[in-house]
Length: 239
Ligand SMILES: C[S@@+](CC[C@H](N)C(=O)[O-])C[C@H]1O[C@@H](n2cnc3c(N)ncnc32)[C@H](O)[C@@H]1O
Image (cartoon, rainbow, N blue to C red; front, side, top):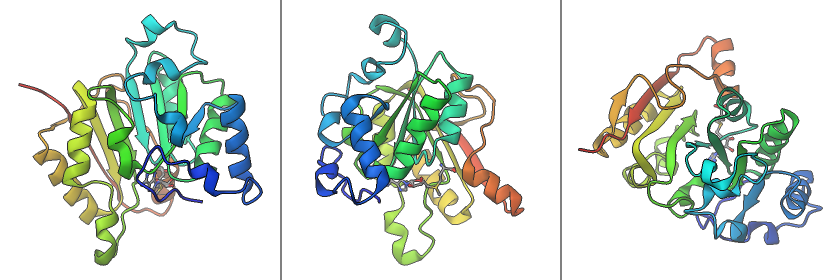
């Protein structure tokens, strides 16, 4: 069940009955009891600017957390990539964002089952990303295989736009990064232009991640089908 509103603080859960879908019920319970590292809607109001403090399961104290890189995966699906990155990098904090209850719950359960304390998951439409983080709060944005909206008449729904890239620029600290993968060449070409024109510089190595690669659910699916996909990384270098 996807969240369509771009209002990050909208009380989406209030619009659903917990009987409508097993994942809505799991989400509600996970958020209210704190048994899963998840949040949505009004609960997110005091997160921007204080994200690192919200990793309550993380053993580090707030002074230490304040120094830890904060990496955000947009469209985290069921959490394969997010959890792989978080496991490989306990020195960083990872936020997954997805638009469906099912994906957010699955990601949080995966993180819990793998004993990862540096993962938090948000139910939100990334179209409203500008309200989710404070200026320069984020160290990196990862977007693997965002919905390509292949039909021209649907292309306005694509996440990567000039406005979206300007939000990424504002929310990234100096040296912050964007990592994009997609199988859809027209979208890749268009998104690269938006990112380039926003002032980012292409790079081959990323803070925290270095030159390591990470797979994803969709990447494996495309590889199995022998289909090509494209990857690019950028850095925010301020003069
Ligand atoms: C094609 S899947 C890719 C999933 C994963 N990144 C991977 O590579 O396997 C796109 C994911 O983005 C999520 N998504 C789509 N639109 C979104 C939006 N506007 N905001 C947040 N997540 C979104 C979908 O629910 C889905 O999990």
